[in-house]
Length: 198
Ligand SMILES: [Ca+2]
Image (cartoon, rainbow, N blue to C red; front, top):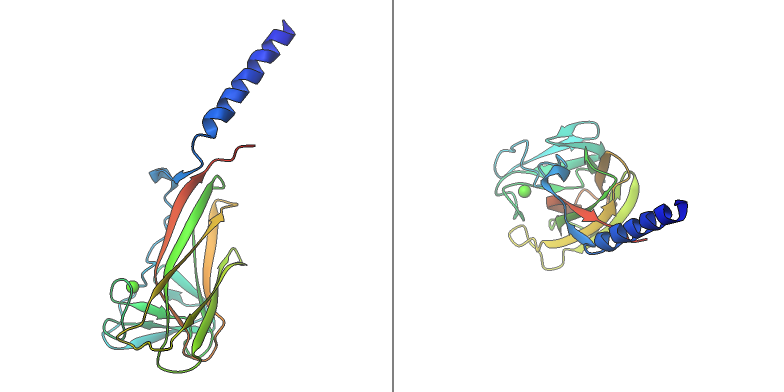
């Protein structure tokens, strides 16, 4: 009797594994919503054709400035990738912004964003990184050769991470430090359902 019962359990387990392996990487359900917001840096609203400098420790809409200072540009200041505003990760020095949002350890998340650089002054190559819970997930750079405020030349970058807890912090940080840094816009976070077959 014991042997037969064990056999049924093994069969059941194999069936579950087989079904699990059908889906490998699919979009997550609505219940995986993160609460991540304002990846387009549209809040607070900045007066058109100007920018505001926000220093470490201060909020920036749904974000917080975590290092140095950053410049949030208003409508018409320069070309954006999405909406009216975008963010120069250098204010007078290298800056950084972070946002913490809800995650599930069973989910992977794809982060994408638009990247350009302040074309007004050197260096030619702007550099920065994206950190997930304080660990570098992506290094990025942007060459402003041929770019202008009217033609920023935005490119899109993306990476994925596996959540390890019920909340995750992502941080965009400049490593340029000249006061003319990387420009970012249109940050998006999408949950994915990752099913592992062992
Ligand atoms: Ca925007």
